[in-house]
Length: 157
Image (cartoon, rainbow, N blue to C red; front, side, top):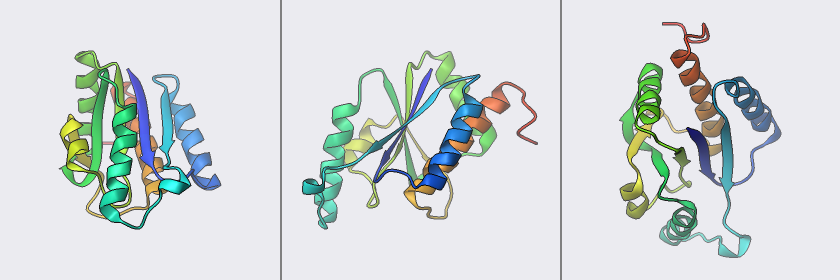
């Protein structure tokens, strides 16, 4: 199963990039993970919240393929612990999901059209985090997921 993390926003700061490389390299023996930072062109940026979400929607839907299994991260999503993440990943692999896309939406959330495209909606926490930090948290959780699935000692129960 291919895993892609899609994140709306700007490129990651160097300290985030370093952390992402670290977790992606640790996950690589089991599965590859790619980060795709989706940026609107500067001319498309706006302070109009709804227009911004609509432009982000267009960008996401243009990339989304039928073989993609979209999981949306949203503060109102289902809260899963790490073992449940692992169970979900195992279930996706068992059912033949080709590409898992974990979407970190824009600063103002996502449109209803994106929510309808999502097969699942998960929440990382009741807390709010900056998008760049969420990328790092997701990268770590993907590594933790595969360590759980492969009985690695990284995850302690």
